[in-house]
Amino acid sequence: MKNSYLYKILVGHDFKWNSLLSLFLFSVSTLYAQVYPLTDPVNAGGWVLNTEVSDEFEATQLDETKWLVQGRDGVFQSNHRGRAPSQFSVNNFRLENGKLKLETRWEPDYPFSPLTDANGVKYENITTAAVITKKTFLYGYLEIKCKAADAEISSTFWGTGSNTELDFFEFFGDHRQTNKLWKDRELWWSIHDWTSAGGGRTTYTESHDLGFRVADAFHVYGFDWSADGLKIYIDGVLYRNVPKATINAYDDVTLQNGGNGANENYVVTKPLKLWLSQATFPWHGVPDSKADLELNSPIGQKDDGIVDYEIEYVRVWQKGNLSVDDKTFGKKESKIYPNPLNKATFANLYVSAIEGTHITIFNLLGKEVISIEKTQEPFPVSVSNLTPGVYLVEIQSGTTKETKKLIVN
Image 1: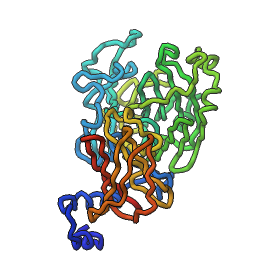
Image 2: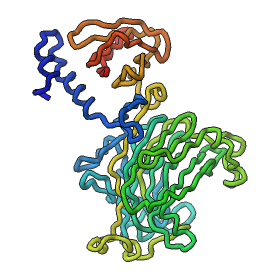
Image 3: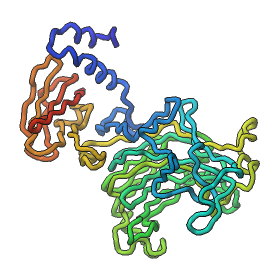
Image 4: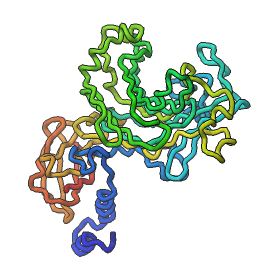
């Protein structure tokens, strides 16, 4: 960066905000490091990565300021201990070679607690893992690159919150029942209503043959979740477009034991936390020995009693006009979006803040280029006079002042 033309320009200027130089340089370098959805590599949609619920898993230890390990310190999100006979263990994960690996283990001597689930089904022999984002978010484009565990075990990606559940996928790596062999290739996704009306029942579901075994190789699964429905992408290609109207027209009452009655089926309209987890699905079959669990494991890996669900990354992008409600992130700070801002796509910068806020934008030289009072929510600010570069956006309400970086390209 220090040999770049931009750096030479910046250090050559004598401007008052020298203390912000490193901040500007970091902002610009971040621009070049930005990753965009596989479905939109040039970011024509103006997506902004939500780093609070995204992870590249490049560290040596899981970031537990971002992720809750189910069961850590006795904390069980949604009081979910795992689907019997498997039970979640805080030991069943690792970061290795730039991947998060959730482990299903054959552990008959594990100290299962409790010994049975609420229906009296015994927890035994098998431990699994779940990690959950600590932050919530509402709507966006989600992308996960992963490979399911190649065993009679599920590898799942789902979200919960506000008495709703959105199961983006529940992969079952290896079916042994002869009438279900194709399900090694199955994409099964569903919506559940956990209010008193729904009781956790399914309000919409689909099952599709992807044409490849989900445990054979890594694939990129994308989900455009919005107020209008769900779009599903496989390896960057649109696979399903399911509008809200289609979901609401589904006869959940007849097909799902009453569903949520006369209520709308599309209940996933509030912030969610993301889950990565494994579980047994007894109706599909359960490993009955260590050898059975590891039947498909590579030679040399058949004796450790472990099979892995491997996740290379989880990324969530959002568009500002879809997620400007501060309640989505559980904090009160103002927001600007899109950022970075592509002038070829967007004519305005939008500011989400309380009414009566004053907005001032400064260039790199500390010169005021825009000064305006916010009068609506969200508030559009024309960027027609801004040239590509890095700016500071000062948002002031009374004595409270926030300063945010803005990148225009």
